[in-house]
Image (cartoon, rainbow, N blue to C red; front, side, top):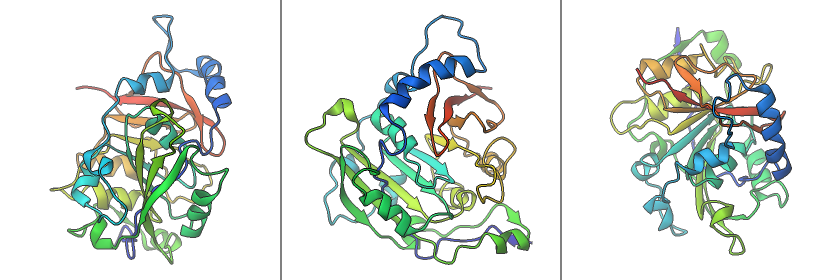
Length: 296
């Protein structure tokens, strides 16, 4: 047996410029009626909140390092991973989670991992006037080395057969950190003043292992986005029963919250947050609902 591919050579950091990338305001209003018709839970109080209203109650201040960041500053692993992080495996060019958490100020830092997109694809989307994050511009883009992202190295906790490993090799893994700053004409109700997204051209399961499952100096994500893509090219799903869930549980790094697409099975011991509507996101605009870990 061979380890999960260590695809971190030449890793860099990226901030994704799409707070409003793939979901419009009209879709947000449409989600209220759609989600009531498609919910798995019953509204016991007769009052629904939007996903945005719920997350606004979890608002945080912008992390000091991000607030004080200046172009030319170095990357600090301790400060970045000491922030609230939303993790999105198999992210592609989907900016919906940044819209959801960034516009509500409930998280300012993100890690997106996908071996199915190239750095050129991402930079083209980030730099595109209509596809990028409305109301934001790039303050800085930091290219990092492997040692910056996993300074103590990493040891895989799961193993794949060689056939799976060979099939899903990336010839050119990458990563970069994009620091986004809100345009002057927009105010606080548009979204956070600054955002930071670490984008990795890497396997979403191996990246979770390397970033969050290495013991000391690693943290638990604030939330994970789960969207299974059917024939999307992944060797395993990300939802319930997946290798990602297994490694998170085995390493005791299970987040409190999941944002789960309607077509994806939630992890065990997570319940959909009652009376909170879903919001459509991703390529096919699947409704995504917030789940929270069941207290035991």
